[in-house]
Length: 145
Ligand SMILES: [Zn+2]
Image 1 (cartoon, rainbow, N blue to C red):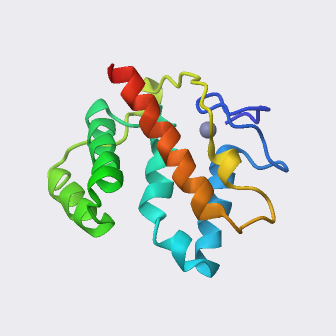
Image 2: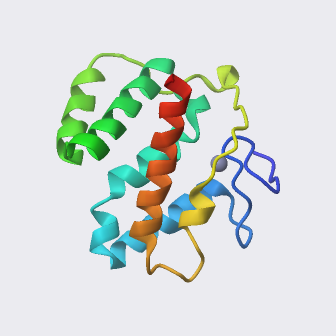
Image 3: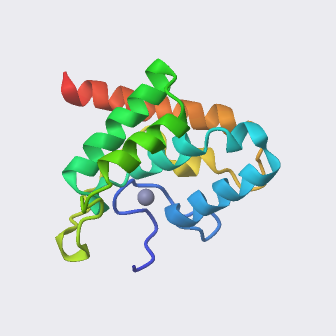
């Protein structure tokens, strides 16, 4: 992957030389010191993946979107969602699209991982994460309207 100033899919800027994938890794690393953030691991990964749909099959994205909504709207636990996903993918169902078929399309978002991972500012990460997730959810509502 060439290094660009902005992610070609979610539009997140480089933050101190970290691309959006590396910012995700840095945010997840904060979970070790922040149990409240760790409790939202599902939401971190789901939010990131929903802003990077090109690597997934349509069905996988559909499943992820419904899990994300069940988690936010109905309080379905990450453990239950994991079991459900395990059942769905028990067969040979493909989750990832072959690399040659991926067509990332840039979408502009009010928030990206770069608004959640603020270097040296782990305080408030959970609140930023929840705002990020609600931006993604609001965007789906618009897309479906
Ligand atoms: Zn990105």
